[in-house]
Length: 420
Image (cartoon, rainbow, N blue to C red; front, side, top):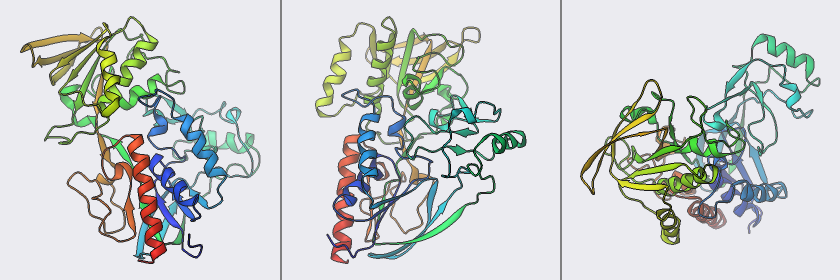
């Protein structure tokens, strides 16, 4: 350890960024962790359970937050982005833009402060499936555990109510964005992933039919903190689902959309099947697939479901989804490539297994990095002292991400310790 080195900048506060930050800080290096959302945890924290153990992500998250709280070497900036990086190894300068929260740290707030508000916003934590008040706690496990005010959604009437009912000084409607500049020795890019935009899949009915949802939406439907308090029901009418179809590779392994395999979608759908079967033992489930791809010991996760008489697997790519106007049921057109039969089947609800897209596909970082044709950062980057981790590099699961992030932290430490 070289205590004279500058901090390591970690961009992204999901599981990759948290892991990299903790690994570096716990061996004595200062870390600046920057996250664009109002909370840490990223996409993983929006999951209901992990595979294959089927435990909630809050288990590991609680441990990591305890480690962060106990480590004074980690400085966290949420609602923040890195807008500029200059310099070289050991002597980088970064400009960080921090958006206003409009809530100060002077007083604690609670849900009673929001009861009289009418202004609402789409709840992005639940992928827009429900609304929250304009003054909101991002979710039950949010860290930092602090309310956020959506200034654009807040009406003038509700603004006056807040100023009257909240403790004096707790709300600052004039809070503005601020910029800080930091000097760092190395940079770890852990910007993560986003779901493929299903609006591109018009043949599969996403955005057209309310009962066509995505795999990430299914995670929130099953979660107790989700829009339906954990009930897996149809968005159109709130009925309990009895007959569900899973469409694998929705846009993936397709030259018109995502030519690559995202590595986790099959396991995700197998997990979702268990969610449904646990909550409704009579539910029937059909999986339409190209290949079922599981990894190593996780093959058993698949084989166990093959023995479930309520679960069917059909090898075939879904060509189109249509809707029955009266019932809102969905009709899938697909060829069974084993029997060569053209199927025309109806379901209560359809779950599209959409793939992973790197955040860097749409938002390039302010440093000269090398990207592949899909937007993933290519390897360790062209810039010495800048290292990518997790889904910023390639699609991967949580286990692979944590290992990859530990590797990135080690590379950053070695680089600044050597001074190269």
